[in-house]
Image (cartoon, rainbow, N blue to C red; front, side):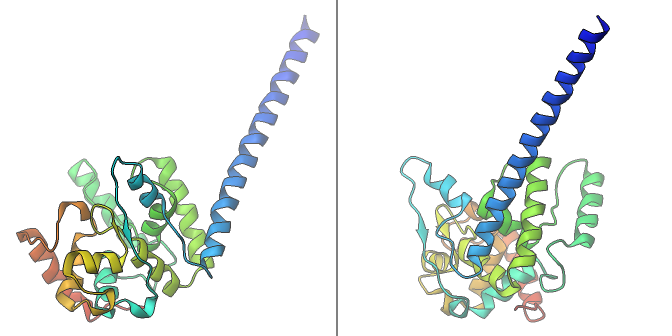
Amino acid sequence: MARRRFRVLIFAWKAFCYTLGTVLLAVIAIQLWFFSHIVYWSSFNPASTAFMNQHMEKPGARLRHQWVAYSRISEHLKRAVVAAEDAKFLDHEGFDWEAIQKAIQKNEQRGKVVAGASTITQQLAKNMFLSGHRSWLRKGQEAVITWMMERTLSKRRILEIYLNVAEWGEGIFGAEAAARYHFGVSAAALGPEQAAWLAAILPSPKRYERGRRTPYLEGRMVTISSRMTGAQIP
């Protein structure tokens, strides 16, 4: 009886080790898949994103997207986006720990999630590979991808990709499509006020159609505009 129990335990231990090893190999393979794409994007432009693919799964979905080089995107938009989304973009390594701490404290005070602290790199990691679904597993994967991006891509390249894939409306992806759809101009021709408006709608881009103004957006635009001059961009 004792020998039989010992054999069962040995079998269970081996099964556990094999299962764990398989899971670890799968996790490593997935991370290598992510990393290979990031390395590729250091020299070549991504053709699509996870968010674009999810949008195209909707019946009758239409995609507006046109890639433009960093030099063909208005400096006003670059400054507005950094000012609105990630003021310390050039200073951190993917994570703004001070902003994270403030967001945690604010959420604890309210008893629910009312504030976030995602950097531009974190948002890019989510847009390229993941989804808008919130979970600790997804946030953990986002953190790993963010770490990879910060150590593989330059800040200029990260911002270039982000501005070309960010969602600015239903099926509107990237600065060029956003500029033409909302204002009828190219991304290079965006003025300060137009740039501030586009930056202001980034958290909820599908709520605002073609230059729509609300008291909330007006206030956000004033705040963003006041910060644009001091925003540091690569």
